[in-house]
Length: 334
Ligand SMILES: [Zn+2]
Image 1 (cartoon, rainbow, N blue to C red):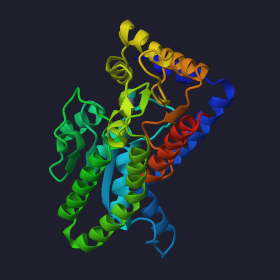
Image 2: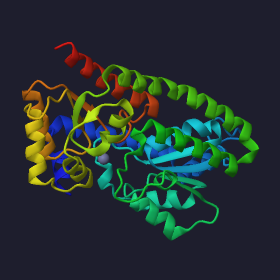
Image 3: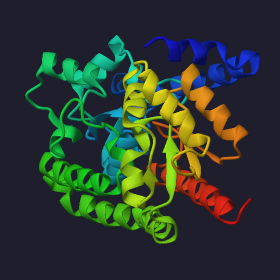
């Protein structure tokens, strides 16, 4: 469990520490900007100072929405547009979301929100506990795992499936309309716009499928399973290995040996290694080094949006371009 944190803390020396500090600072700014309590304070203090109250930023009539993670937060923010104020809790690209520990500010925001989106399936039990304890009768909750008919123990990386993303966005849209029916026409237009914007990412997935379906690939964590299915890529890494990394457990020794043999060309060549940069352990680093040594292209992916200020679809699109480039490089014999 703690092995990942140790690596994150000691892995990159001073440069990494500076980057983390900068990210932490910008994260704090984002949080202040989005925190409903803070915003009310800012609004009332500016009203006291001046007769002109700015309406451009925040109005108290905005729906207060909290997403446990920023991939869902980006999507609901694009749907809700100017009628919502969205706070995403898990946003740090340098931390492992599987290991997130909530704080009192998270609890306060979750308790007071009109609408809460959690991933479920064990990915954010901390958030489910908080909303269960507060049991706010005026709050609507979207549990994505429940929506998709999934349960704890199932692969929780639903946002890496374009089908599940579509289903979730459709539910978010209908929830917004039911919470705030006066703005139904506005949300409908936002929904149309978001679907159009997601088109590019869906098209790239189809393109990879047409070009590379059946190609053997490997991954260090189960985050890539749904996208491998969507792109038709043949993910051959041992499931025991990738599931254990996701859960913060040690993979069975046999699965480690099998993975290493796959990278060494036994049982079929691996074309690309997909490397989860947010669930790093000594074993995944070892796998990455072995792939590099064997000339296997490595594609980095992340659990949360990276960089954290871009949209869900821009982030996904850039990961898909990296994947496509790596597959192309290998196909062209590098
Ligand atoms: Zn994961």
